[in-house]
Image 1 (tube, rainbow over the protein chains, first blue to last red):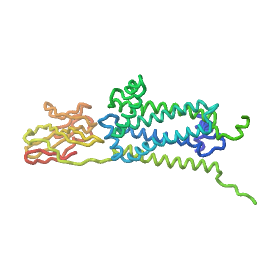
Image 2 (image 1 turned 90 degrees about the horizontal axis):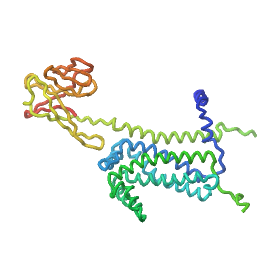
Image 3 (image 1 turned 90 degrees about the vertical axis):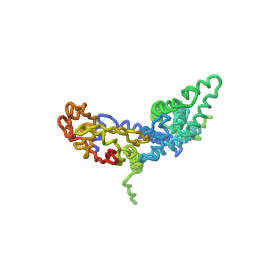
Image 4 (image 1 turned 180 degrees about the vertical axis):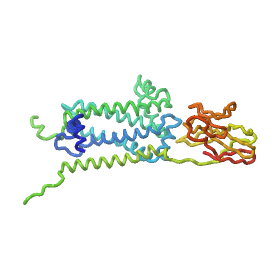
Length: 222
Length: 160
């Protein structure tokens, strides 16, 4: 075992990468500092369960509802996979928001971590985008009417609202075009954005290190 | 007093705990994931039914006659119709043999070529004799046969 890992390390240098990522010095922190990792963990669950759901899910009005019922009630473990994805979606929003509140309250967004904060804000928008597009996919009454209302809200700005609404819906009405594009955005556009942003976010955390809680001594020179 | 050094350091313990919990969570997600993926493949929905083919009078003596029929089948979340074809052969108008038209080599459809008195499979030039035995080519065995019954001058085969 050690021989194999030495052999690989000589060729890949993976140990230095491992150490850079996981063997880092961190300041004395508390449980509030685990929220980013918790969000990342749930994101991984969402990716795995999301990939599994696409094995049976079909994003057309003919089949969307039936395939979701099929997954939930007929496929072995389908209720579990869908359940994880369903509750994981709520967890993503809650965890990332609480994570953001901690960053605000501890001032962790300040120099030199502004870019980490910017990517974090973008990530929050991506998470909300996931929630909005994913909500339509079961194609049941709740999904249909929630998206009718949601897209209508997007159409409220003066002048450009009408265009925004039509671009989001892919037409004047909520239709198969809407379902197909929400699916495309949910499984291709947003995951690509999520992975790219997470890469930058994590790179910066590893490069700069985490901030730690603000201390009273920090305010001495004020 | 000599303080005994713990056998597992705090750092090692946390490492082991992290990997154990990680492994446990992976198993909790991974094992249902496997059954989720292979589940439909394990489902045996081979219900054998008597499938009506048509009138007995359509079968000519000593000529394999093609019968086409449709059965409804549930595939995943859709119930749809599937076409099945059988060749029925009789020597005397009383005893019937029903053969599948699916080549036993790789599943292409065979057709009766009356000029040559053989079943021919266009995929790899296989030939079967009139009663379904392999005459030439790669098929490993004769054409599959089905149980036949006649009721009220109607032919039925047992299949699914």
